[in-house]
Length: 282
Length: 338
Picture 1 (cartoon, each protein chain N blue to C red):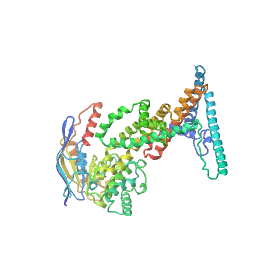
Picture 2 (picture 1 turned 60 degrees about the vertical axis):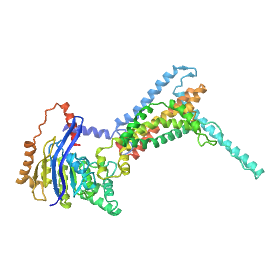
Picture 3 (picture 1 turned 90 degrees about the horizontal axis):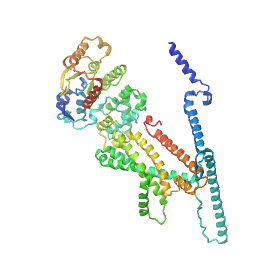
């Protein structure tokens, strides 16, 4: 398979009041067309930073990202992002949210009828056609995230970037969304990079799991190939020995090799630590 | 188990309270809510009236006793009566004029009749209308300047740094300080043999505008600059051009804050207007208060008290009207509750 996305030698240094902070050091990753790759690692390890650099929302301090032979220098709809907290425009309906993206990307090439059809097609794909004309505050968290995915898919991106897309959802809704995502993936064969904290989610959905070492100067630790047959069903896999083995590989990496040494901070100081982490992640 | 059944029973009871017949069939009335939304305000007003009339009886001024609720209520009636009488006079004047003109045209067919306007004094109701027109013109003019300015400084941090000290200094300035300056500038620049609007109107309106500009500028700029980072990223991923970014993302996102600013500004505008009209002699409620004060009849204080109540009620009405517009126009209903 040919390489679609080449992340090469990325360093990321943030200027902080306490001096420069190296978040990423020498991140290398090649992703083939149609591949589903998960990034997993402890919080604060720079997963989001990697994703934002690929999206073009952040500029790497050195190194670069090449998509389809061209260097990524700014954000664009060829690298659609599904944000963690849906990021739908609250004053627009589900349909209008997708419409904004479709008109921007295909406004010149598609006719009005084609645009309408394409918006409706994408909302159908995520099973949101029944609530097309509802606004974000009228639908549930899972439904919002579905619309967010529809908006990203409707841009027909070269690569879909998902930043903990199901992190804010309850376990049942999350399982439902994972099944939906696998279904869509089966049909469209998108190239996807997904950030996750959830080991089961990573093993269930991915072709490869990229496990990142802890920061500062985080980098790619190990890469795990997931050669489970598709379509995958969560019930069958629960009994599958290979699945169990892969799952424990990831757990071993996270909790033995890269065990996060949490300093025992007092509750009052804890907030500050979390805040600075968020800052790094952003 | 027993606890739950007790709770559900009491809920059922409150649904079918003896008060529900007032609201009609199918509509349930919560007695606690009736108590707090209808009964308590009535009690509050009654207690206030009692304290007022008690205090009024004990205050002697050079214009007689301070007016109590009854005296003020009488003046409401007499001010309305004066309005009706004045309108009848005007009507009679126009009828006489028409008759006279018709008679002259009958005598001399070449005669072109002159129509003279009735020049009677403004009534209290006319003055209310003048005040409303003045305050709305000043407010709309201010909005026309403030909202674009707020968007510009909300989008551009450098511009904000430059403009912010000016806003902070002018924001607390009283209308009374502005008015002499405005008056002199208007008399110097607004020279016309056939003026479209009176100078006093312009003076009041511009003073109102200068004072109610700031809450709108500040709230709009805060609304624009506190735009959610994620929404900015959505716009960047879509590569929205600058104008479209403002139109599709920035403006709708800051609509709730713009409305908050507009409500604050309208409140300021109405407060400032009365002072401005007093000094500028714009024939509105401010001039009414001033004239009654200068007049010094035995009814004057009661008539001023009428104006005070009317000013309060209109101010409240303007705020509610703005809230209704906000409810209708803003997507964020949670910010338009009270």
